Length: 450
Length: 189
Image (tube, rainbow over all chains, first blue to last red; front, side, top):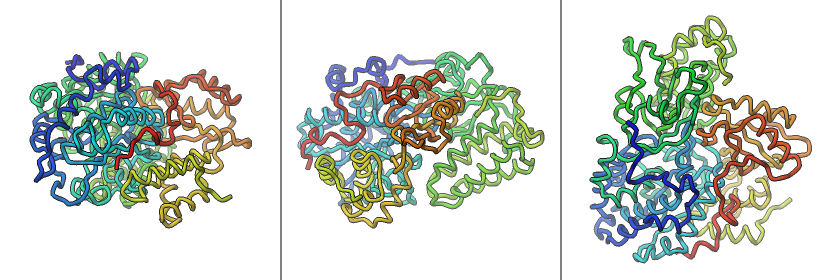
């Protein structure tokens, strides 16, 4: 079911008309939610507003960065008793292949992000917020800075934010081209002026994050959804979409699709509806073969209707009509991640596609942990050998063995992010890998170049 | 050639120092300031930043080389970055790369003798719904076709404003991808 007539949207008229200035944002009722929240006094003992943390929990808002972790629970973990300053880091380092939603939110609705920052900061007793935006996004950064300048001029930020007497400052911070800085602790290392090396958890950032102080890290989209929750009330907001998967979701549709783009819908939508109705069908009217539902790190779904043997040795088929929400996809052994749907049609060679992805992870591995640095390299080398036509059938189990040794053995999830697609591609399209190794060429006739 | 901040970048640098709790945090923004002033980050400028931020020069160099997006010494005037990660590859990134190779007469990773163009293959540029995508300096070029590539190269060879730039609406007097505008921020603390 496609529901796009939502009471609160991030990609509203501004997206198409370019009306993203403060003046236009105020006309649409902007900063009302922040005003309401900043008028509430903070609990002097806890230095937070517990009622509002409860409200966010009640809204079932799940982090839009990829993990789908309940935002309210994350807020609750902040160490409010620590006699240190607290920080907010907004993650706008979006680099997951397939994902391009934060970029659009920041470009076309920057004030919505800033309003969300005001709310999060005041509720959690935070005075300094940083927006970590990837270095490639120059124009996006300019928009953000322009909006920040407008908001400062209007007195929304500074030592007396919105006349509330509390100080809230925000600083946009540019990254410089490293996928790993999208990982929360990697982001903090980078913010501190170091290489983007992820740190060992625990301590979790909520207890000891940036500059060894309690730090809240939220995705840009998560932050931008907050004003909607405050305006509508958590109960009404929680009713948008299916139970426990509340709120609007921005689906990024890319790959072999007639009309690629961003679609802000409730999570009632099915994969088939997204591809056929939102995206207008598969490119050149070919049949879809494989679809990655949540960004390149997530296990692929086989949608050509053919059965495959899963890890338990059972013959199964993937459901093309699967509902695109966190829980349904998790039950199907994949994940919604960042809702980046990458479609591949029947002329895509899955061996080459996996090689392309693994090359990405090898390039972006920060090099701290051996299983990831070496493992992703080995995967890439073996796949390169198969694609060159020099593969042996033993290589396939070799790939699975290396991938198996990468999962769960490293500081951050990058190793898993490489191992997960490797495992899923090989399990679900094993015959293509076998064919490539035996026949020294792709099983796909007339395959597109990758 | 020794490096030092000029008046403008010094002003921004001093302002930056007040926005972060530690001096070290100004390292990444510091590289951007150097880039804005010099056009790239040189060895001398790294030593200069190390001194300013009270960090070991080897550490500064290590951080600089960790990141791939800063402009290096010897890069051409136009750095062409062709995305070749899966969503772009599915929509013909190879063809786009071949077009750039042909028109620029350059291989991947090469810079021409006149230091005008550098051709790079990069990983995901984060604009997957408008693939294939190329970034040239600060600008994004989306939904590329071989014809568009030809137009773009022709314009840049003559140092004209390139067609087909697909950036969203820009701010008047924007910050040129450099730094937040100093005057716009009142003293927060």
